[in-house]
Length: 250
Image (cartoon, rainbow, N blue to C red; front, side, top):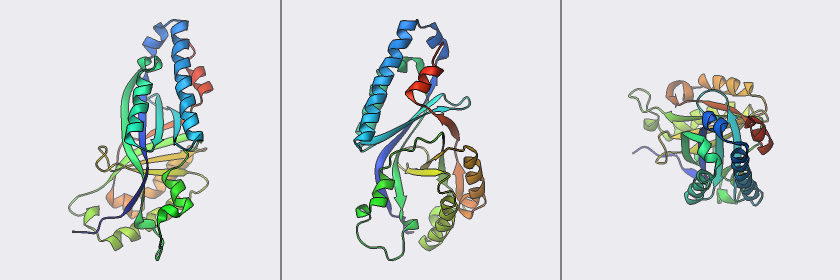
């Protein structure tokens, strides 16, 4: 059997995409809408407190286009915590005005493709590694999320390549990503056995154009050109409680 890549795992991840039922929202009276927003703000405060206490992280964005209106991106130590967050949101009055459109369950992942040769010791003792596995989500102006697979076609089967070949290609692929340091923050989450795709890629940037440039440049790299399969792309703008209140005004 071919050698599997070794991975390190950190926090579990949930991308929760919702549409707003604007017809229902507009029919609600001022008191009902105010109560719904107050409940959401209280829950949002809990998310912020958890982040401050290093128990997880949350980022909320307004999605551009018709695929969704909002995404909550949550990181937590366990699946049970993520599930509890789902239930807590669904019990709010605000959730009654939303329609679930898509979700993605995964876990923050680092593979040994990019490991430094000769590295020894427990990688979890490395503060840089620990920070990447349990990150505080950036609050950049824009987000881009997409799921992806590695092909298993006859001629282009990623899983039939040798470890040396895969490592060489991933190093080349990774160097493209590193060239965007300071422009784009990337969080890779693994979802094999957890969701329909194999990985989720979440990009953050203060300049949305950098998403296009990065993904386009990577298309020419062999890893993407030969082996990449991609799902739908979701792109959006950072939401704060104040911005959400403005959006929800009737």
